[in-house]
Image (cartoon, rainbow, N blue to C red):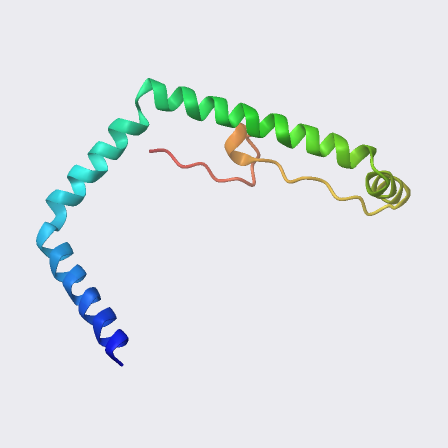
Length: 104
């Protein structure tokens, strides 16, 4: 019971302190976060992380393709008429009539 009371009082204190900080503090924090994200060092690190993720994805895909499971999946999909295809990415630049475009 005492733990619940402490938890509820902590929530109340957090709410009151958060309310006092208000919108100005939120805007300040958001501006600082944008400033950090747009910093060239952070962008470079994000690019390196993206390249590493793509490399790991490709290596994993190749390993699965050369494994027994990959061989089984490739023979199953090539022998059936109902092959699955990946959906097109409307954000990657394909301009199909079925996708809607939004101008900002």
